[in-house]
Image: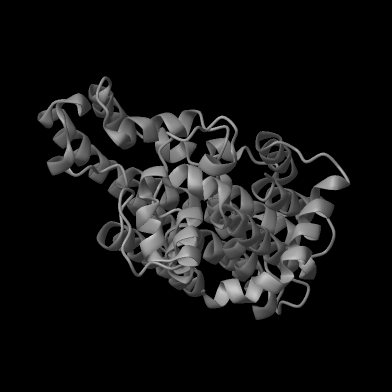
Length: 369
């Protein structure tokens, strides 16, 4: 059993109580409502955060080319569709959290000299630019993830020519977005922020490389444990948000302690969000035993770690049903609540405000089942 599991097992009752008190006092808002209310607080429609870039002539030309893929099963089509309609996960979540964190912290009262700049809804323009940069980086990597392995395709996906063309468009459009993000990052003229966000891009590359080289959606290496899952998930899903929150505090000249708390919120909230996503095939009533799920999702990894490799292999044919009824799901729920609790703890250093409450509501939304 991993060090993490040994750490949380004695506090299972506490986590259960935490979850109950979290939601018993008032009915939690739906994810869409939470996002909508948060957007009002920051005074910025984050659903249009990348609009200036997405409406550029260069990307418009790419979009026209991508239309040629309609009718195929290239992942770039579903990715593009998600930009337009994604009510469940909200693709602009990272930028929204950065804006909320910026407003929750407010201007630094100890900075010498005081930071100069226009404040709009309690947020500096540089912090809004950072939120856009965060979204551009995230979107660029989403598009890059749409590259498919030509060797694994079948005729049902579309013609080989179309799929090769889709890969070229995924590379081109992803690179375009990333280049725009890097240009905007340099324009912030803050070397520490450039260093932090650059390291986040490196983390993303490392995390995705790890996913592609060590594991896949349909297979899992023998040495993957929950500690490995947490490390890889932080790199590929949490580092960008955590370091963007940290950078937002740096732009407002907050001290190292506030920057660290912002980092911790972004880290733990991201891990809780990923756990929520991994748990859906096992906790949603709409999902049946034949629903596809990743063999690298947290419930599967925990189930295998708790039962051992041999038992896991013997259960493979009925894995979904067995995991759904086993300890892997309950342990994943504990882990989700743990990270949610840690994210809430990180907010203790921020003053009470609408923005702080919105950050808490986001945690409540991703830890509710």
